[in-house]
Length: 184
Image (cartoon, rainbow, N blue to C red; front, side, top):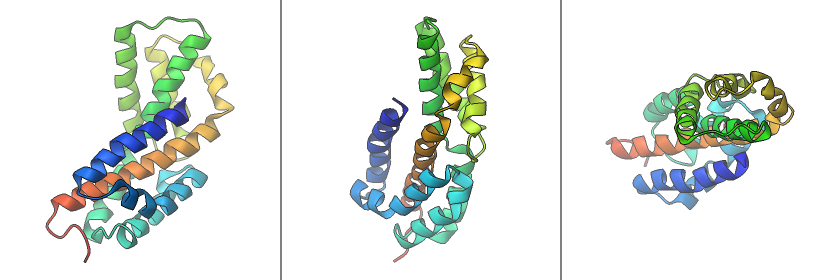
């Protein structure tokens, strides 16, 4: 379910962002595939940062002055894959334990997941640690992390990939708003 949510997020949200920048989603995704693959394999936004910067300059033609600001910032605070992961995992744990979650709690999970993801470090496995905040908010046992820990590495690959892709999509949008945003 996490992978499905991440793919839908990438295709809808990032395509919209790239189109808002006046570019084709096909152009964008074909230009960032190397950084996406690196993020998928390393599971680290921080380790992928040099590749993201090179790809953004060479393939997307973003001015280095812009990408040198937006990409490190995004690697630090743009963790939308982690927010999706925390929300889906919390709902999974609630279902596994037979705990009904009323709508106000579900909305709170969305908010808590989003805020917790902003504070998540760009290193492998950090999202699993931050999942404890969301589980505690929902009144679920923190020990349920053991259910997720066994497959976390597989889920971490996808969420890191989407986090890095989001950083580059936003970089393209910022480049569009600046006078010399794109290289000739």
